[in-house]
Image 1 (cartoon, rainbow, N blue to C red):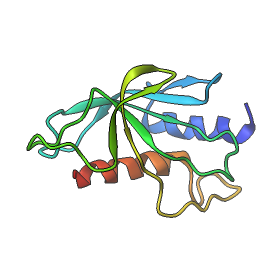
Image 2: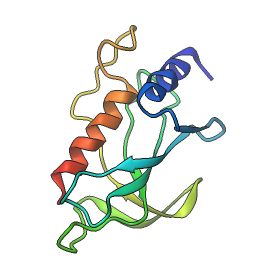
Image 3: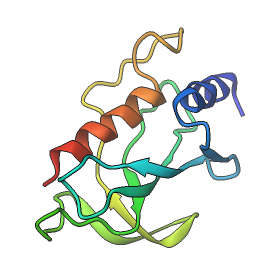
Length: 129
């Protein structure tokens, strides 16, 4: 594992201390991720994403949730596929998602980082549809 990925994981753990890291596949799992009230039928999910192996130059893409998500009104969200199979199981839902801007800097807390990416997921989930 390279130094940047170690730094990214340490930064993520400041907010998600229960984060699970799978170094063989570069996957990250957050076992308990709260959803915004009133947007989804569910209030909490598991969240997973793959850490790009070529950080900081390669930007992350997509995130996966379990269980399958439905909007509060019963509709399926846009840019979402269920089921999706990942190394953590076959019962995940996949959101196509990437940050609007990916501009990492040598200093991890300046510019884009994986914590910013997870925060952008929260923005996406607040949008609902």
